[in-house]
Image (cartoon, rainbow over all chains, first blue to last red; front, side, top):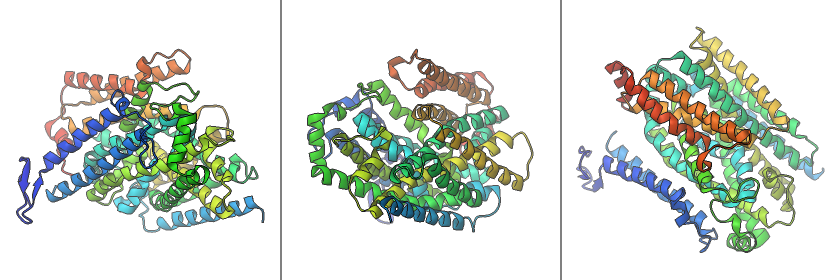
Length: 88
Length: 492
């Protein structure tokens, strides 16, 4: 179990893997949430407010929101894994 | 047998299965208030996932979502945006609240807030505002159920009777099994809804227009204003960015503050179950996309339903599907309504008794449980009266309800994270925020809209609430160190 919580990257003694510390992953998640909010509300949303190109048949603005949600899913999974490893 | 009779039969079968699941699920739960309101804190991942999912797939999303896409276009996308923003904080808040719930025996949100900030007046205020916010929400779900049944039986079963039958069943299983019934029926209903959302959402664009892309290409050619953010208002004029953006923020702040959702922190078996539920929650946002496609499929359809809320049953009935398939689709739409409605009625009754009555009168565990059951009936009856009466615009009321509910967020955050917060600060902030929201709502309601930039009144309330909470807290004496630490430093 990796004990260090303060460093950016910690070595996992058992698996020998390098991974991001819990605190780093939390910061990434928080930053992403902020970006998510900026990109879905005014004025950020107006930057991605195009109908074309259609992606998977969906208008670009709808596809873009879906993409943001998928990235959030991946980050949440990473957050969960890192919290589990830290034994919190 | 006539077509509508086959459809009615399938719906009856579906209702029967739901009732059985609801009645059976309560057998294991203890007969205490903790068993009735918090399911003995023993919900696993599958059930938790669908309980939260049902909140997304309410009648609002299933009937209102396609209705918005159909009449207001891209405005509906706001419903997709707030889920992620609203759920992630719960990853941290949920387990913390659950730990405090286990330690102090909390089953509601107000108990948690008033545990840190002891004030019976605050508890009563929260109870009253919560119930006020719940009534239009429950009414909307009941009306949704009635609409679906009336539409597919070609009027043979009128709206009031459809709503009465569907919600009669909900009341029976909620009375009998409490939150366990809510959990297990939501699981059954959730699986049902997802299947239907995907199959119909893909089937309609393909069968009518030859594909999703083809459908949007045609909408872009004929109604381009529908596909550009922030979409249109209910009257068909362009919506403002201020309105769209603040709707996302208020809904995100309010999402997990709805007592029927927040209280589920107290039902989870373990903190990991809670965290896993949060991780999986955004999948439900993605499941909403096909629901929007159903609404967009209606845009180019030559005929139109009597009102935009009817677009889903309207498209189902016009798709020339076999009666059995139509019946299943309608059962799915009913699931959306009932799986949210049961949770709402159960929470409204629990909050009334636990937060509105219990702080003032000593009651035994058994009589509290009885009283909660009595209030389930009462709340159901009140909502039913509203549901069958035409007139009041429910969507307007529901949006206002979000304005009230999001005022619960600052007290929760202060209780769990800010040591310097005081009871006076929280009470003052809550009153100031709610009054501000109410003031701007009424200004718009009486025709003289004073809201700057078309911002949602709930957001304006928060802009007053937070500074008042901070300033008054800093001006009053801080709480005893061990008391405040026992809340902010609890390990999840």
